[in-house]
Length: 521
Image (cartoon, rainbow, N blue to C red; front, side, top):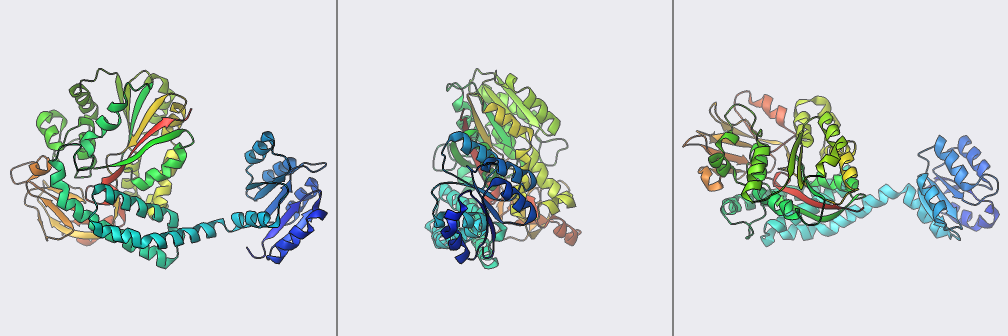
């Protein structure tokens, strides 16, 4: 903040000499003028870091000067100072994107703090985040050894995600390394926890000690809201949405909605669209879908799309739950379809339940693997979150949410699974019928080196998973590992390293958002 250049415009500037002297003693360079016109001319002639404008000056008022300055220098921070607390004046100043608003009489420390807030905001926020994480580091570490249940691991993951977002890419190198090491340790312990408990979860009754899982989320989050005094319930599934991506979305939707429940659920294995999303819409585990609705299920090795019957499975679940409701199902894979749905949104309000699937985030993760320019746009976790946020901000989905906020509706936002950035390869051998996903493999005669990072299910029915033949088994990677075949090994190691994948065991893939919103209007 030393040597920052300040312009102060006030028709009583002579009475503020002590304030200006105080700022100069703090190392700031302060220029002063006594009217709005001179303030505009001074800004045009010289460079300033902040402008303080008195609102009530003779001739050109502070608001008029503010408008002129912002027209030519839209990014120059301006602080409005006024004796008036009239709402219209405040609204006019805020609408012109001022950086701060002070009410007279002001004291020197108020001015100094306004300068610090503007000039050192990023630095102060980073310092606060660093000291906050340092204080929380030991508490988080101690929780690893308290044998947390799924809810406990979820809280650990949320806190680590919060610090990752707070510190961002601007944390000092040592602090970033410490956080990364703690995240890695947490991931290792969480993966072991899942491996030890997953088969019990798959065979436990709903509502017991196991976490909420994919087959039950529509019943618990959407069906339960139907008939609760709202026009309609919207169940919006954004494919491959992680918890940290939801937190980026949150600031976009909170101006329009109250968050009634910001929860999570546990995605089933494999954390792949074919398994998770079919399970969500059917309200059944994959084995049960394959047995009861063979026409709607395709195994990994079979040709054709694996999620072509979500609407039919949803109808089967509605019928099974004896719900006499009117509903719709829409899958949005292209922007044009999203625009059309938003334009005709009032038709959706006639339904008790509307299910909307958005495939963008999953498409983004695949594009990042296959298209160099996308990888360059999202080279790290922070950039990946930013690109995801931009999708929602400028998408037809955001327009739809804004329109729905004008009505008495309930919104559920969730996903089928998340994704994790992979970095460590693991060799595996399989026959021609083995599944192609690099985070899990399903097939017969799987050959691999046993490892503590692998979770194998040799009897798929124990995990309520279908099998292609008698000898089929499943193998899942955990943490940031990925499977690679020995053939052309180095090529595929480099091709898939540092890409976002799903199908295995990790916080990012399994602990996913289940959010309930209600309109503020």
